[in-house]
Length: 276
Image 1 (cartoon, helix red, strand yellow):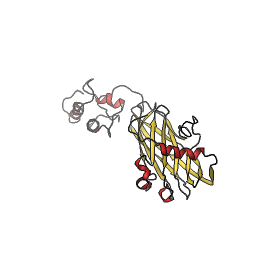
Image 2 (cartoon, rainbow, N blue to C red):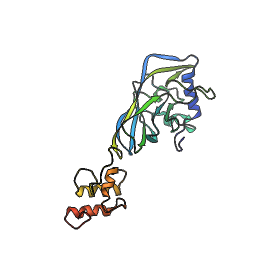
Image 3 (spheres, helix red, strand yellow):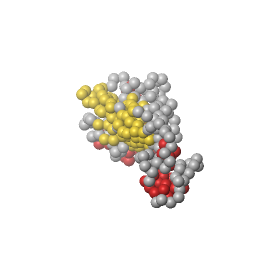
Image 4 (cartoon, one colour):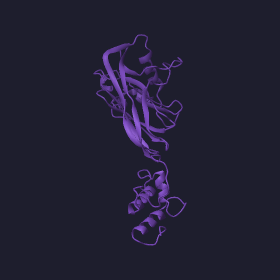
């Protein structure tokens, strides 16, 4: 389990377990909550962010929910999970239980390939619950350099036990509220998300070196020099592909430096350069 992640509190987990393990749960007839993960495009080797949304929330609202997002840890690293606007109700500041646990909880486990997510409040007033719908959380990560194609992000039940010591894993997504001693549970429909890998560092096979063509547009000019300098000064926003790195190293096998950009500039104004 990764450090510095919000761990789901014991009280919250116990509360959620009741919603799926009650001896006689009450289903809210005809009321179905929709959980959806976004479909985005990203480059191999680069960062991404995808929203997890909850919509079609019945008028009574959601007092607790518990589910997970399944991903492939061989193709990506999940870096963080941030609560969305939907999860930031007034319960975050007014629920006294927040002194010992978070209303919104998340954990990232590369071994099970799951991002576990939960939300619950001990407050009985529905005005503190999740209502209307919107972004529940945003998951951010980094694609591996060899990622390609379409990578699924699936909405699945949490991997934890139904209650501590049961040794029985949850088999359904928990979503609902408490009404006296009754557990009211909504039906849940899901829409899985996906990341369409546009390319980045693995978008195409490495070819023969085209000296100076850092941006791979088939020409060598000042724009290549500009891209090299941008990639050196601001590598988070400006990246060279594997082929671009090979092309940009015009002086020799010393890596891409500002001197490579200088030689391209010399070529552009007709001064002697390594291109002669």
